[in-house]
Amino acid sequence: MKNIKLAVSLLICLGTTVNAQEQPPQLLTRAAHCLAVMNFLPSSRVTRLSFGYLLDEKSYPGDKVIYLVNYAAPARSDGLVFAVFLTEHDGRQDFNIQNNASFVLPKDESYGVSFVDPPLGGTWTQEHLASAIKRIEKRTRFTISVKDLLAPDPSIRCESYTDLQN
Image 1 (cartoon, helix red, strand yellow):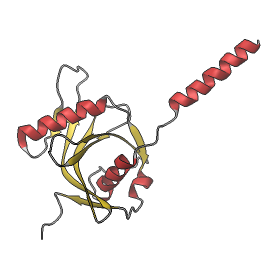
Image 2 (cartoon, helix red, strand yellow; image 1 turned 45 degrees about the horizontal axis):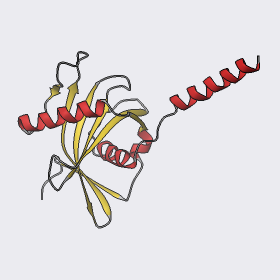
Image 3 (cartoon, helix red, strand yellow; image 1 turned 180 degrees about the vertical axis):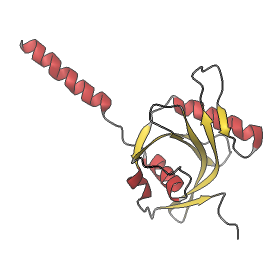
Image 4 (spheres, one colour; image 1 turned 180 degrees about the horizontal axis):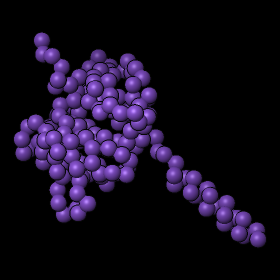
């Protein structure tokens, strides 16, 4: 009887640990914050959003790019992908949203990424975004509260290709 109680307790502890949500990295949260405040995320009544990300320091020599995926739902493989360039200026991180697209990943992995709303920039850009999406799919997904995304963050600056040029 003691062994059964011990086994049940152990299973409960393991189940709790497995289901515990890993905290999203600050880099992801800040980039997603910029997507939210710059109105790149679709409006909805959901209170939590599902994201994946990848930091790329090789595709654009001398630049850091964060690829973010905002999934349509936590268990789905479709959504929006964004390319956000990261720089630092005057002690603040600058997040510059440079591209975005809607995508769908077919259930049969032998097919590539299908862009519902293709990105600007042609084949090269599509290939880089598709590659990033496939790599992000293999990584941890993070859930972030919409309320947290909209909270002001004075340590960062958000920009995008849609900003008016002076």
